[in-house]
Image (tube, rainbow, N blue to C red):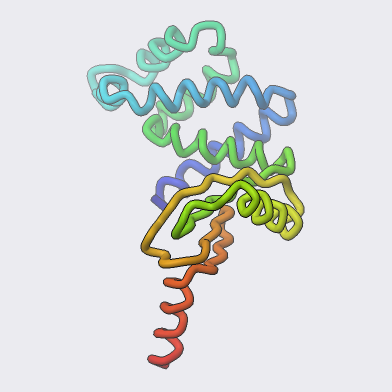
Length: 178
């Protein structure tokens, strides 16, 4: 996974800078979303990977699929991706682009794992605390993980806050071993 992100990052950053400078963040978001869906299609991946078809032929096919959304900039982006054999990385590029777009808008997504379902008031309180600490608008994505035993584990980008019982037990075990 880390390797995929490493490959996708320069493309996502370049597209984000281009879209921001041109004021076309929404359009690029839509195009990248469509391309990510196309890149997850096994038949399309087979066509792009098949040496029988040139990068230009694959680009023409993608341009036809995108229709009016295939601007000159989008065609240039596709040409670079296809020439460098990076078409399969499109979902990761799209994910990073959306992360950059949200960060630019002062928003961040928090992945919250809990041992038990949170009430609306608990979720609101936790989100408010995260918003205050991160100084950004927080969108919470909550999942239930019974292995945590109790508490919560919050992941925001590279930041991980583990306030779960299993996390505390793991810390205790580590400290007892050393």
